[in-house]
Length: 137
Length: 88
Image (tube, rainbow over all chains, first blue to last red; front, top):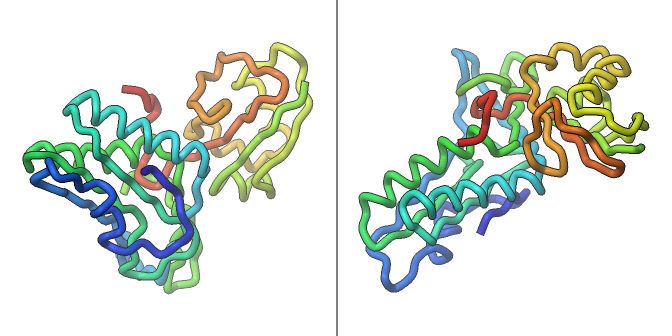
């Protein structure tokens, strides 16, 4: 499953989706909204996606993982809209028979998502500034 | 020919709309289309070096030639920091 959603993401939303009886490990990465950026206090974030392309690009990352590690069971959800501090913006789950590949593939997945998936965030800061983040974070 | 231009994040702010339609001569390239957009929406000029362009939801070179009905997307650097060359 590769999905852009405006709904709240629960930490275990993908667990049962990716887990199958032959697996021995599920590695999940959750990206969460933090309350600071460059020494400035952040109140919340607004995420926007080019949804159709973002879902296709997340699927492409899944295909890369299949080619590199032979892993079939990868799932990703990215949220859009207004997110409060501590809420999950992206959830990635990788399930494998053995844990080592799952850790590596999950780390690779979030790196690649940040490179090729068209999603943007706007910081709503305590000092009143509202700014699209257009730099490497 | 007529193409649909989709704009996101700062590019959307620069254009003042998330989607516009533009008429261009046949044979117009992606790069030429973006230059036309900069003429129409000068605030886009600041994205000339950083923007990535996609045609029908796939990253495209500026030399690529557009066809009638194409969807051209202006993709500013994504929140995690986009590469200039997103392919492996």
